[in-house]
Amino acid sequence: MSTVALQRLIDEQNTIWNRMQELRRGMDDRDLTAEERQNWDEAEARLTVVSSDIERLQRAAQLDTVDRSQVIVAGGGQDGDQRGNDADRQERYSEAFYGFIRRGLDRLTPEQRELLAANFGEVRAQGVGVDSAGGYLVPEGFRNKMTETLVAFGGLMGQVSEIVTGTGNDLPWPTNDDTANIGAILGENTQISEQDLTIGQRKLGAHIYTSKLVRVSLALLQDNQFNLEAWLPTKLGTRIGRAVAAHLCTGTGVGQPEGITVGGTVGKTGAVSATAVITYDDTIDLEHSVNSAYREGGNAKYVFADSMLKLLRKLKDGEGRPIWVPVPTAGFPATINGWSYTVDDGMPAPAPGAKSIAFGDFRQGYVARRVLDVQLQILRERYADYLQVGFHGFARLDGRVDDAAAFRLFQHGAAS
Image 1: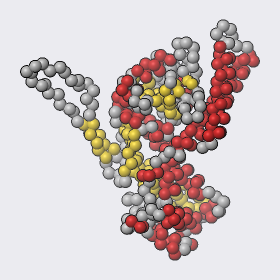
Image 2 (image 1 turned 120 degrees about the horizontal axis):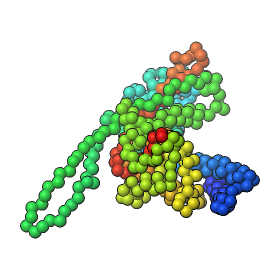
Image 3 (image 1 turned 60 degrees about the horizontal axis):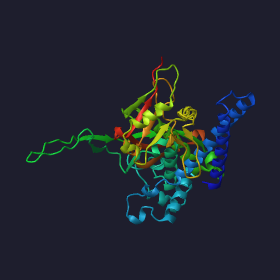
Image 4 (image 1 turned 90 degrees about the vertical axis):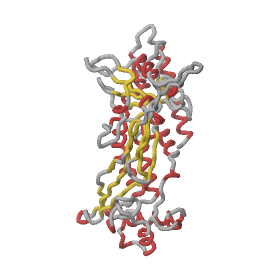
């Protein structure tokens, strides 16, 4: 990410913000003139554009921090020398894999065929197809790009606690909520009273997400100017990312992940209204519905869709000051009431009865489980009469609320 470009946008954002505040102060004792109203509207529109550009650059910077140490290097279950740990061998394998995609198996060199054969696997285990139709593990670079796209698409995914496993077996773990129990003063020569701990259990599965089928013409695949290595994983990852983002926010938990708005607890309900409304007092009540132990842990933040951010940017506190404060400088986030926020359009849009805001510590409150291997199936023969090759990707993932006390939801009042 260009630090210079980010700082330039931040400077422009703050300049616009200050100009808008000067115009706002003119509203205190008189109406705005037509010219001032036009200046306000133009400034607000430009502020929205600049703020969006800042968020894009910051998200790009977050991708640079994706932990690649856990990415499994393609290997065929042979000895350690055949697991692709050597960078040169991994590069040659990548070249062979993309050569196979572009030209087919018959036009590879014997060395490239041998590399692919050493990294062969079944679809149900860790492969990417069957036999010459595409049964070869995807290279690390492809897997990284697809995973980064998935993570970037749903802002919530980057905020929760994530467990990465090598298989998709059910993953159980114990639970306990002892917050209602407290200690006691013990009198002299008095027997200690008993208070058992209640242990429960939850489990995570591994729902299979598919990108659906993408058909690419052979002419395009054979064109060396076509950047297949960047285009294909991005398209497949984005499709899966859209589905995952929606389910982490609103999933039912039946045959799909449990979303935070389904497994979470409402901490504040807004006023009954025919339209979606929220007040400054609502945001304060929501924040304090989360126990201070979670608020003060350093990870508490807001999560909402961009349409809710638009409403919050217009809110003022009791002194007439906007509760949204733009990015002050590079490295610092924009805030709502002093709290940072994440925009995830998988969250419900503001509407009567909708749970459109979540606030709290999502690293403690929600857990996502991802089976690391990205799967890709290549269908070279099925669409041969169209001179096309079919691709579809898979990701295995589940998620659910872990500690429901760690965050709370704002729900709009029902329609009047």
